Amino acid sequence: MNQSRKDLVTRIERLRSAGASERLRGNRIGLEKEGLRASAAGHLALSPHPRALGSALTHPYITTDFSEALLELITPPTSRVDDVLGFLTDLHAYVYRHLGDELIWGTSMPCVLEGGAGIPLAQYGTSNAGTMKTVYRRGLGNRYGRTMQVIAGLHFNFSFADEFLDVYQAIQGVEGDVAVFRSDAQMGMIRNLQRVGWIVPYLFGASPAVCSSFVQGRETDLLVFDPHTLYYPYATSLRMGDIGYQNQQEQGTGMKASYDSLDSYVRSLTWAIETPCPQYEKIGVKVGDRYEQLNANVLQIENEYYSTVRPKQITEWMERPTLALRRRGVRYVELRSPDINIFEPVGITAEQIRFFETLMLYCLILDSPRIGAGERREIDENQVLTAHRGREPGLALTRLREAVPLQVWAGEILDDMIRVAELLDGAADGPHVQSVERQREKVADPDATPSARILAMMRERHEGFFAFARRLTEAHRETLRRHRIDPEREALLERLARESIAQQEAIEAADDRSFDDFLADYFNQGRATDIDRDPAVDRFEFQERV
Image 1 (cartoon, rainbow, N blue to C red):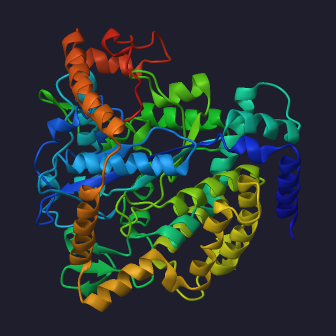
Image 2: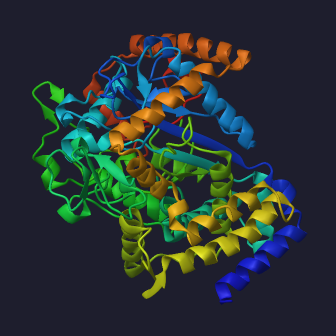
């Protein structure tokens, strides 16, 4: 056992002795699940976001992402896995009541796209805040193409109980500011999530194939599965590979954030938001009377930076995310790499949630040195290798300049995670332990992974990716239509739909300045006077969804 693993075991024992298992029960979990609205025929829906669902600008749980057709369903944070899944299921069932014959597409990769120009941008009304959100999306389309932006994912949001972090700080022997310790500890966790993050697409990747319409004539080395489907034979998650959404480092228009500390992370993103990019300057910012992007800098705003995991802080109304982090530190961590689980009506299982929680704790208490340039390249290469070839026999990844077979490294991670899971459960055979144990089969037998199962089913039924995805999506729709929503929650969602529309109208009525001035004030936050709080939204709890 190497020193890092010995230190891990020691910390686990010290945490157990300090009663950490009880305190860990206060951990908070939330989900953000995207899903593309599709017509009954499986084509991208061109209809507007249903008004009966409320305002996408102000609804706390039902909104849109890049496109008007790309739903985003958000659960509030909770300590119980059953509660978060129950809320997500109720959201799906409620949405389906207002979709007519439309579908919530059940895979991360879209199907039947007829060119990027036909993908409608999300609309948020006439307010300056709503206009900013749409302009940002227009900028993404101009920079990267609209097709890439309608890939759907599932984001796992996680925060440790304050009581647990107090214990962890004590056993680490770190004195001083609690908020600083918590941010430092979680930035270390994020570095480790990047180091071992390839295990998420290996175990849970569910996009080994794509519809040929997604590629739209671009040259790739994808193989032909059938006339309408492209794939890699050992792929796990093409969404997380280099055909998915990436910041374009190879074109000289991207950047790499620094995760050495929260301060370095904020500084690196701030640099990108304030530094002009010649390629994006060619697009123009305000062309005629229409904004084509928010600015011509390396990043328009923080959220444009693609990453598998992010430090987050709840933002106030129109507060910049980096400013929120600088003011109040890291509140929670967002894991962005999970694919939509096509085999489940809501795209995720309790087993996955418990595995992700165990992974978070494992990465928190594992040693986490800073990531140098060489290790950064290894992290990026390991991710793409796993996404494209993760099930390939004998595949080796690189760990600190040494080749390590993927199955060997995965086995070591799961061995260590079992100890962590026992700490979470406070027992040797609890639900977190079981969630980790069940992943051993996938490591020993790659054919047990979701990606392999998808390709096997497609071959068995002689159907392409579109036919496979549509069949399971329709089955999920019928399951969710039969689901009985909790009556109190149904009443809540109906009330929020009405209130969110009124909220949007109040925001629009309160606007008293031009969009040019509004945008200038937004980007000047933290440098001079912060953007004014809008009294129309003071009573409404916002989640950062730009």
